[in-house]
Amino acid sequence: MVLRQTSGSATIGQVLSQNMMICIITLLCIGLFMVMNATAPRGGGFDTSSMFFTKQLTWDILGIVCFVIIFAYIPVKSMKKAAPYLGVVSVLLLLGVLFVGKEINGAVRWYRIGSISFQPSEMTKIFSLLFFSWYLERNKNNLNKWWNMIVAMSLILLTVGLIALEPDLGNAALLFCVLVSMLYIAGAKLSHLMTLMFLTLPGFCFILYNKFDHVKRRLEVYMDPSEHLQDGFYQGHQALIALGSGGVSGKGAGMGLQKLYYLPEAHNDFIFAIIGEDFGFLGCSFVVLLYAVLVWFAIQALVKSTDLFTLLVSYGITFIFAGQALFNISVVTGVVPNKGISLPLISYGGSNALFTLIGLAVLVKFTSSLPPDRPKELGAIRLNKPPKVLF
Image 1: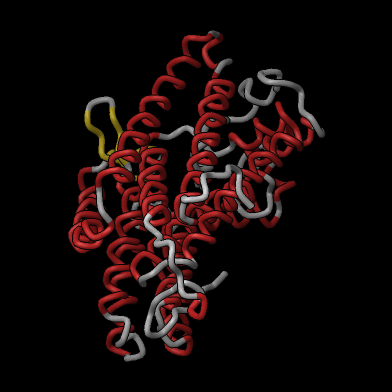
Image 2 (image 1 turned 90 degrees about the vertical axis):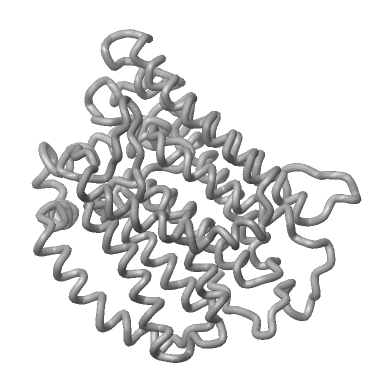
């Protein structure tokens, strides 16, 4: 399944990367339009909408510039060499934001430089994947030993724990799932992983539930939403109204009413509800289809990887991108408790847009670098011991 046919001389990696870029550009255009659409009524005029659109466009352009630089000028070998340093940088920035970061709504997640805010946890999702993939490739023959497993799990908990302390529990949980599954793919014993998870997860969940009151609050709201229509579930309730009122084909671009202060922060985490109100089930289905096609192309590329490093990085980026999209849509539709995770490439947000594009640039770069000759007997993965793939 491809969106575009290329010349007969094109490799499978080039075909996949070109089709992935078409999906990315389409989602970016949808995102820019929906940000302007969702913010148009704020302040009663177009100027406010233009402000949000301009800010998002600026971050998108910066992300596209980084995308082009990574894709055209940075070799895969250079990324692998830089991976350990990027891991150290990400941990230092996560530590620093706890002391000098700007607090917004009770969370300390941002560095503030003038009018620019920077969220290090978004960067960490990409840098930690590169670092951990580099680490696992170097130790792939020793992952069945307890000591190496403990070290690997400690690295995971260090990174995830620093993000959780901000607190940013949604991204922390997503990154934890990605890194642990990468450990399994690289060759770790399932029995070892399950033992470590049994020893760490219950205590971690206990701390989250008892230390962070908003976690307990959101679970209570999720279990009994009808009792919290005017407080904890207000935003979710308004999102469901928006989705339901859109029907099959929607009310038309800009004709929805929920963004008129009924749905708070409609341009952020709940922008999918505005898509549903204005463009209906068909519009939502088109967006979901774009995500599904992009992820499908990514899966086709990662299973053709020729070394463990590129396989793990490609898998991690695909997992995070798909996980963010799925979780955001699940929150908007009321399937899971509310937790602030953006809809990638569509929601308003600078750091998320920038580092999503950087991550996708790495993925597309690895995809385009796939060699044309791929041994069929190993599923195109040239390894002494083929890794496990979860798909």
